[in-house]
Length: 290
Image 1 (cartoon, rainbow, N blue to C red):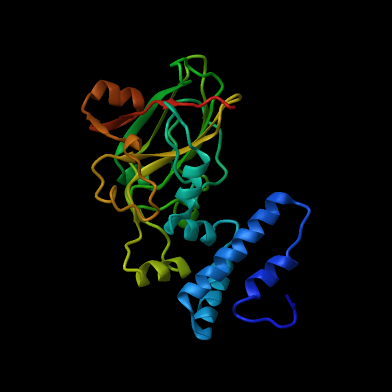
Image 2 (image 1 turned 60 degrees about the vertical axis):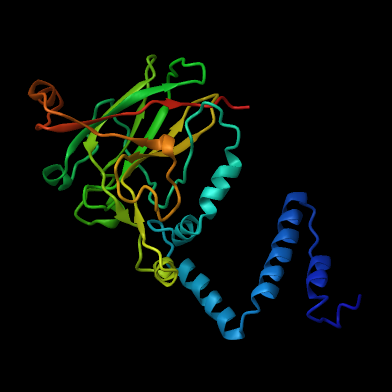
């Protein structure tokens, strides 16, 4: 095949023939990327203006990324790509807790003793106080010691600390380590449902596609322990109106839990809470590393 007589019919093969690497996995990636990209273009038959519009969209997506905001992660999330990659990489969990997306708001957090209040901003006056507790076990039900539990969440009006100048740095975030009993607990305020950022290209995409940007209320967990696979997941608030239409497709039935109201003045006093406060219990099961 002549490499100087390029046509619509032979272009894909010419590009593939010129793509040679010593890395077999990268070669596989490039071969499939080129084939699927060219197949998409042939199927859609975009105008040149439509193609430049797509390039402009990707350019502006990159320009929205910095050390606080990751618009490409958001794009991956709202297209379902993040959840598909997650599903492929966590097949065969067995009895282990199900995974979901990391999301774009994970950041540095302080290490705390169990029971610490992670809410330190104006949400303390507005929000509904809650205690979150549970146990970390292996798939045989044995408690796991030395588990690093990294948690982060939005406030009661739907903002993470990185989005809100009124919140202190590293607010509503914390890292806890389990003891021999495998138990964890911390104090916080109930999160609420919130929109993903819509002031950039991803917001434009959602509006053009006729989709809402809302995520149901949740708390993020990143759980690490030697000898076990890392668990990245959320605990979603039961009853939230967006559980069945999460903008990033992250909800799974097994990850939904109730916040139970507690009117005990004695228990509230011990926690430094007002009544009523809320209790959410959720146990995690880790999968042993293969």
